[in-house]
Image 1 (cartoon, rainbow, N blue to C red):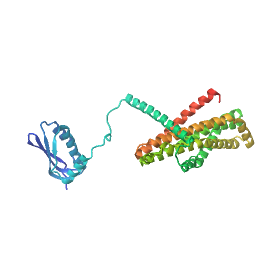
Image 2: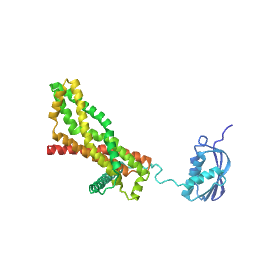
Image 3: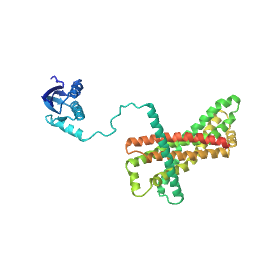
Image 4: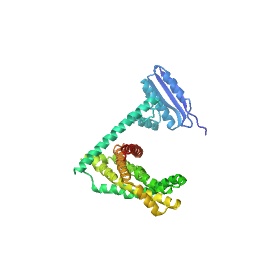
Length: 378
């Protein structure tokens, strides 16, 4: 059986009334491509006050018919023309009524306006300053929460604090162990290539020990914790925001900053220096493996050289960096989680932003602290 394509018959009933007869198959695969041209011709006609749409033998229909009728309705509204569809099948009328009863959400349609690059740069700059302001504000609120804790007035569950300690500390040891050993071995490999040229393989121990203690131990630990723990903070707090649990805490009189953020930030700040010391020790162990197996150094030689190379300043400088990095990771993760939107995509965006922002903050802080160390001779 041959399917008849969609047909439109336009008839002038009166001077101000047009009748549109629809017939044939109004399916997506069967509808004509020039339907839009006929609508445009109808739009150019003058003096029309009413349009009657009638069924002249519609054999089949799907969303193609509804799309045509919606376009006809949109054109008619813009000109103040009434549209009568009472003669159409009942299913069509019900779907049209349902579509008209739910207006399109503002901002749902993708904008096709071209935005100048200057406008985009300006918007990004304003957003950057706004994010910086929010970060400083969040850090201030966290400082006040710490002050309340020191005065014994902060309210949070000690069990939550110890649970976060467990998550930030012992549960993070496997990944930190692996990365620290590998970083120590990489530093030893890089130094061995150059020092072998001068017969100074023994100084591999100095390079690995100082590099891990002053820089790599704290830096690699912070980056790992940003991707592991900071992201977890953002995801959990963001999910609580979506489920309106944070609103419930505020309704009950609890401060989210004290009840949720403070134990997480405190646990991470306390654990970061300990994890950094652990990373330094394993990094030195990784360097020792390379020095002993590749460079024919004895364990005693490597140990003595490492002890002589390490100084109190080197260890303390790494611990200071690790404590600062802990604050940055905690602030970034908790801030993104607390200020997350109320959708699943918002939680994902908050988690991504927490990791990216934390790594950027860590690198910037590391550069600034290193410059301060050079200036002060620390």
